[in-house]
Length: 194
Length: 163
Image (cartoon, rainbow over all chains, first blue to last red; front, side, top):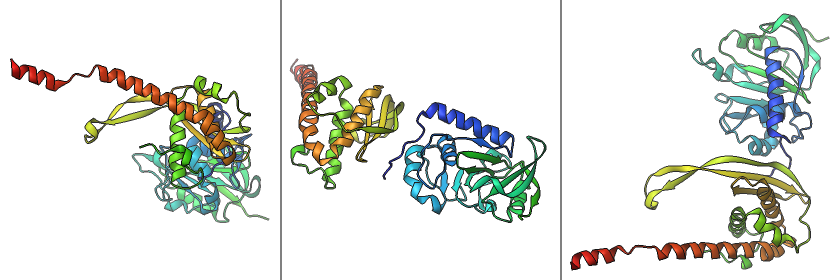
């Protein structure tokens, strides 16, 4: 195992501020927050995605890594110490492209909190496919533009939303920006790309 | 049996592994105040950046009675760990007993430098060897004091049978 890059400079304060950013993003879906400023994760991991992992993932959670992120395995293993797990049972998934949401652990009706959290690294959170969101945390529908989601994302998300209270939550990261789509969010309109 | 460190080449497995375990064990038992005077006559250690820590935590120490009994939790002890990377890219780790963050960082820096062939012999002779020697002497003293208070039960048995 070779690790050459540090994690959070101040583990306690940085993890707290990242946690706050993720919490805000989850409670107000569609708003963009920043996390992981000053972090130097190994490529291709972005700052916000790395901050999510350092904040949420530890020895007591299971993690599944996308093949594209295999090169960051040592760094994640060293700083998070999370046991690896196949996608179907993982508590957290760190992905470069959207996995099949239906194949992930959606929790149970007794314990919906066991549903997986997908941290997805995308190209941009301010340009690309436009989605109109509504649901808890959104007093009025909000529109987000995301570059890096598959074209049929709205249908795939609708199937996940229909499982409520079960389902998976999604955190989208690009650079040091992050945006969350909790399972409660409905995509009311997916604008076709011009 | 302890492997003789002076004949252990620093870069061959598994000897390198055993040698590293040995110097890490010596550093883990040496306090910051023990190490610093030994470094006084040496050039400054390579520049480093910290990858993790130094940070303190608790680890559960497990024991076994008689070497064959079931494992049990003996108690928790505080441990400080640190990982550094020196300017040549060598990564040094340290897990030391107690909460001395300076000791953990210094031990990690020494671990990184000890992997370098140029530094290895110098640190081995002027830091690790004296520390190992004083630790062995301390252990021997304690063992001697403990041995002096040993009760020879066969003596009691003889006395009882004799009366």
